[in-house]
Amino acid sequence: MALVDLTLYAYNFFMTLSTFQQISLCIIIPFIYNILWQLLYSMRKDRVPLVFYWIPWFGSAVQYGQRPYEFFEECRQKYGDVFAFMLLGKIMTVYLGPKGHEFVFNAKLSEVSAEDAYQHLTTPVFGKGVIYDCPNFRLMEQKKFAKFALTTDSFRRYVPLIRNEVLNYFKSSDSFKLKTSNKGVANVMKTQPEITIFTASRSLLGEAMRKRFDETFAGLYSDLDKGFTPINFVFPNLPLPHYWKRDAAQQKISETYMKEITKRRKTGDIDENRDLIDSLLVHSTYKDGIKMTDQEIANLLIGVLMGGQHTSASTSAWFLLHLGENPSLQDEIYKEISEVIKSKGQGGSLDDITYEDLQKMPLINNTIKETLRMHMPLHSIFRKVLSPLVVPNSTMVVPKGHHVLVSPGYAHINERYYPNASKFDPHRWDETSTTTTTNKESDEVDYGFGKVSKGVSSSYLPFGGGRHRCIGEQFAYVQLGTILSTFIYNLRWKLKENKVPNVDYNSMVTLPEEPAEIVWEKRETCSI
Image 1 (cartoon, helix red, strand yellow):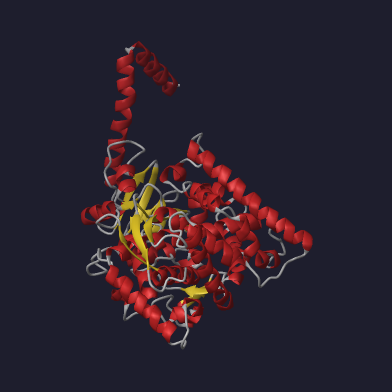
Image 2 (cartoon, rainbow, N blue to C red):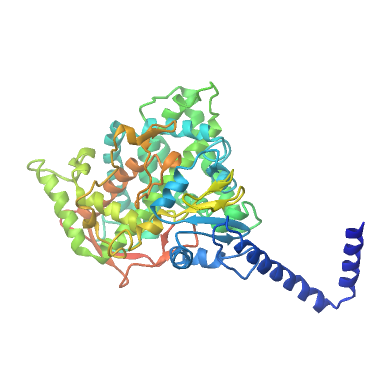
């Protein structure tokens, strides 16, 4: 009763104040509460140090959103490798470096959840019943279904298909038109998303599906991509234009996949070895006997292509820009390609380059590897804490309901792990493996989609780690290697501006700021 009386007294007192005084109190009280709460929080010895912030709820969102890696480094210098910050009402506990990678990626399912962290962000983009909109054991089986189309035999078929798509793009795109032009200017933020969609759809989804794709589809995937922003992480649905575009794009792409799936079901034209669509139509029954619906298969196809869109579009844009700044590297790669072609005998050409040949081109693979080091597509990876999580070798505990954040991209560009880290230098990898490292069987674990490396305490993890490690790593190297070799053998280019663009962090994907343009010219060996 006393509490009710006190509340009524406070309300009556508040109503006697002027409008200006009322507004002032509404602003001042949250700020005072915020500062007192942080003071009490900082006194707890069982909590990770919290980065101080002035604005309630928003916390450190501006600093993190505009320059995440610099923000992390500033916090590390003040608090150490483990600290927490407020992000739009959510407390994010960051653990930097290889020990942080181990802490988050190898945490138990009972301790952290990617599904709870991402479901509201990814479900409007991919659709229901797939990726993070299902239990983790279902996701592991979905990844296994998709891997049927990611075999070595598949990669052998994909190389000429990807190369032909790039050459056709050189002929038809307004950015090149190589049939009638010997030189020109191309915006890599336009060309690379389109090339990524065309090459991925032709190789993974088959000729019939590729014919349904045009430049508007690259635009639709771009609209989907804009659904991955910090504001979407907090508010998955708002009455805003980019939300409407996201939803319209998801519906359009889903309908297109469903038309092709329905056609194949109706005609019985299904060959499990032909492409990913057919593979999923055959291999999509869970261990408990439940089958994925056709709509779920369509949604999974969106997720698979979307994952590749993130990696290949941004990575190929970045390596074109870095190579434009360093034409001598282009000449080195050109020499590497030419020597492989020469080994084929008289009359050899780029068309003779096979999947096995790509494995014999260390500079091409190291260029991809170095690009992924400097520009990991996702600058932050989240998990939601399901049960109190003890920080190793400390008394600090991350409470249930908080989030943990790991950033391999931060380690990739940090001088503590890579000397001269800001320099684009593919030769730094000359004495190491250029693609996926094969570990001993004892160092591997199978989460349900095939064996992957168990160890994640590495400074280099461009494809993540643990049970959520990207299954498309080898396909990415095939796709990017084929795209790069086709560019190099047909074109020579330089930057239109004097330096490589800065990173645009407005999305959760690390893209170049526009204008991101190259000035190109044909090589003598251009096949068009």
